[in-house]
Amino acid sequence: MSDDVAELDRFDRAIISTLAADGRIAITDLAKQIGLSKSPTQARVRRLEEAGVIKGYRAILDPIQLGLDYVAFVEVKLSDTRERALAEFNKAVVGLAEVEQVHMIAGRFDYLLKIRTASMRSYRRMLAERVSTLPHVSSTSTYVAMQAVKENGLSDVV
Image (cartoon, rainbow, N blue to C red):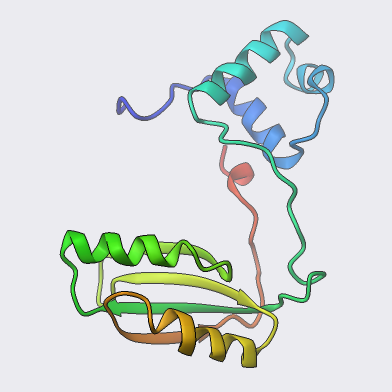
């Protein structure tokens, strides 16, 4: 296994899976669920946090309830893909609140963005005024999501 990948046993995986489903579970309930006592469970959670396996805890918001039900995936092609240009694009794109995810892609375009807005109108404005003006953007292609079939995290795979 790579030096960067954490060694996880069945208890660690059970902790991760349980916390991914319910980050607010009490440590005593977590301990019962995974089959350990409270102290070793706390120590394992602390170790997983310190190792960066558990990066934090947060509320999972419902974007539909917040009026953000328009989702578009945007292919972005850059005019320059040298390291400095990539760094400039990366720095600028992370500042856009509507951009939920940014992935550098190996393929016929350079980045794939997941953008969430309230409407087609707000998306078009955001694309024209903010995404298209990011450093080194030469072209974009938009794919509109009609339905999210699955949007949860890693709890299904650990």
